[in-house]
Length: 533
Image (tube, rainbow, N blue to C red; front, side, top):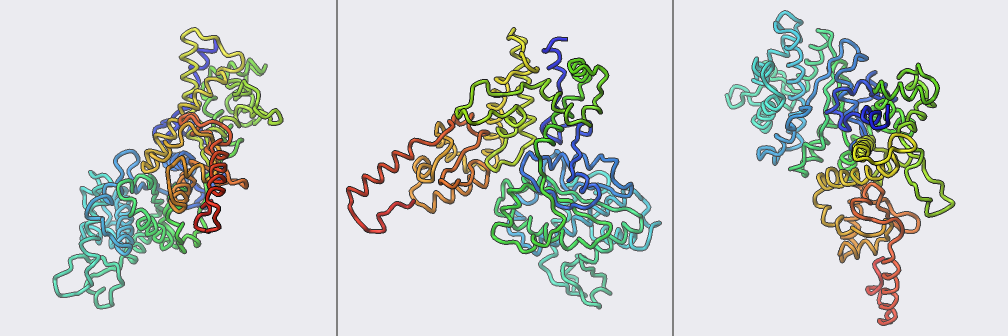
């Protein structure tokens, strides 16, 4: 079989977990995954593309969970974001932290009630707590037969939202007929309780008791929080802080768990100005990858091709090698990787002869990471998929077959250019459009620049202004923190699309010379005339 046919059989799958129907075939069971399924982690934090959604996708279908655990999504998986729809509405513009706490509790009770009714239509035949809990939701209009069987999450959340906005600002006054909501945010008096009022915290406790009666534990999962506030960024901080506070309030429940999947940059934004509650979170883990786990990720996908495994076995003189043999041996994983990829990507000798050229796996990892230097598996899979398509096109047009592996180093470099464009347009500009005009001013520059050079290129006059912009670019992973020599650096992932060249910007020298000439001409000791930098 020739290399074109072999390469066509290579399948790296989708780089977006939600679009991958065969994720379980090559899911990497990391230490974080093992902690997650054994209920030792509640909050999973990581940058975009790090695999948070893959963890949740696998969690939904995992056979490793206890049979009494049920996964419940609080957000639509693929459809329009429930939270974005509600929080971007005019009605939510002035929602308070008090009301948000009320809303989260009501919504979680609705989801739990839906689960219970989905398993037991005749809930009145169940325990006393279950009957009381479901009756309360029905009486308050927070659940109905239609909401349980024929409605998506949006309508359920909207029902809870409307209930909260209608009743949260009113105090509990019995016998006046002015309050129809019997679920209240503040603890009612004994007399008010006799009138049928229930504290929302007690309702959650009742939900926990009901689940215990039917021997069920519910894990309520929240993902896609990055898309919830695209239209209302000012609400992000308030809403997410209220969610984390609610998580902390629910830690002692035995049968209710919140599982929150959140991006690192969003976490940083909600904690940067101080968030004491965050210091009390013990069950939080960061998604982390290393070279070994990335190698396994790639090989686990490549090895799904029986043709590849068979031909690879012949090439290493182990004709009966199986996929499981490969996945259980790091040595075979490396050999299969370099059966597909060249040993080195760069054909040219390094600029510095004392620097050893990176092998292909480390080249791919380093080139697809942003300035945070956090490994990004989504970008890696995207690059490989692009490189594969480019190589196949070349072979079909009569281009010579690769000497080493199934892909040449040049097509991997071309795949990086496509990945660079994807990262800039689909991630950075799509999520932070206000940065676009400034980033585009750095086209055709050198990768390493000092602050005064960046200031000149971005046409910013004040020190405060340029520091705000630079800090925003650092936070978004577009440039690195300044090194000991004061140089900021644009990472490889953005160099191709912006035509940024390796090395230090020569403008630095010109700027310094220009400043020196100005100092000589002015001959002043006025501190106001000194350079800002």
